[in-house]
Amino acid sequence: MAGVTTDAPTSPAESRLGRLQGWMPHVGLLISAGLAVGLGPGGTGARVPVAVLTVLAAAWYGLMEVEPQECDRRRVKAVVFYVGLLVLIVALVTVSPYFGFFAFTGYLKVALLPRRFWWAGIAVTAAAMAACQLGGVWNVHGGLVGIYFGLVVVNALIAGTVTLRSIEEDHRSRQRAAHIDELAEANRRLRETMAENAGLHAQLVVQAREAGVLDERQRMAGEIHDTIAQGLTGIVRQLEAAERFDADPERRLHHVATARMLARESLAEARRSVQALRPGLLDQAQLPEAVHELAERWAATSGVTAGVTVTGTAFPLPPALEVVLFRAAQEGLANIAKHARASRVGLTLSYTHEVVLLDVLDDGVGFEPPDEAAGGESYGLTAMRQRLRQVGGSLAIESAPGEGTALSISVPALRVPGADGPLENAP
Image 1 (cartoon, rainbow, N blue to C red):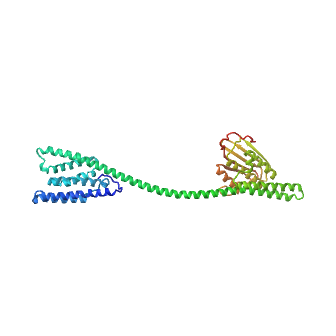
Image 2: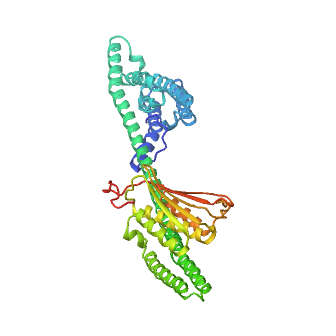
Image 3: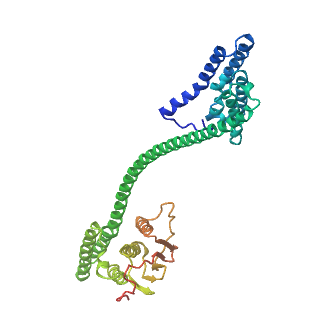
């Protein structure tokens, strides 16, 4: 009976009650008309108004009725219907008190009015019902006037209170039904979202697995380049040098021994790479000492002077950062040996509060730095950039034909937890 617009589904019991309430005015009108004709005053003059008003009420009800659920959207028609219904109720009650069985419809439909007019509709309906209870409007005179107004007040208070409570309860019931429907819809969307998330999770697992496989392939490719490829290059260079000194057995044996040493070191580094371990020099010493040792070994095999300088206060870095810096130094020296034709090489390891820098400089022939975006860099430089990006580092190249080359590698200055002091044996 409430004037709400929700289309929430109702229970079977509520549906049956709604159908019963929908039929009650029609049944009441039919009973009232039958009683008025059968028990009321006889004669055409009394029965014609009853018949005409009954037909008008039935037609008005059938053509103009507005359901409470629609009154907000059809407010004007709802008000017109209710006002016309009250007029017909008053007219029917005036003709015969037996139409009290239909007059109660004014209570049932009061929710069609705006809330501020509910008591007005209840008062008019109570006045009509009180007239029926006195036996007709013609009895409201003399001493019965006071009784009539008392009946109006009693009807208004009792029926009005029950009606308003019924309206509010119906409104709350519809709200609960709407909330239940909203919760059901939310649960349905939640189930769909969970199913979608499960699918996305499965995709992410597959993508993560593929990314892990790709990262491992890239790591292995880089390690192979830094160990086996560079080691083989050094071995080939030493064997070629040995061939040039066939007439000098001592120098020939020196190059062969160097090649043998490089082969052993490369084999050991290859095994460590497969096991994802740190380079051997880093396992035996801190990063500055490992870079010193790397430069000394490289100078011994290449014949080029290499110096190492450490600035700032050296401190332990996480293993991943130290490996990246060490491999960068290794790659830089390998490229100098292959391409630079340099006479001097310098490596500078700089420790600051924000970054750790590694600069590799040579006085060789230099080159025109390739465009990284165009993919013109060598595999070694590309692998170096990839390693640096993985740890938040960067690589800068400065070179020009005839002016040597400078590589500048930087990584974040992250300290190893629990090791805040400087390195004890740092150069």
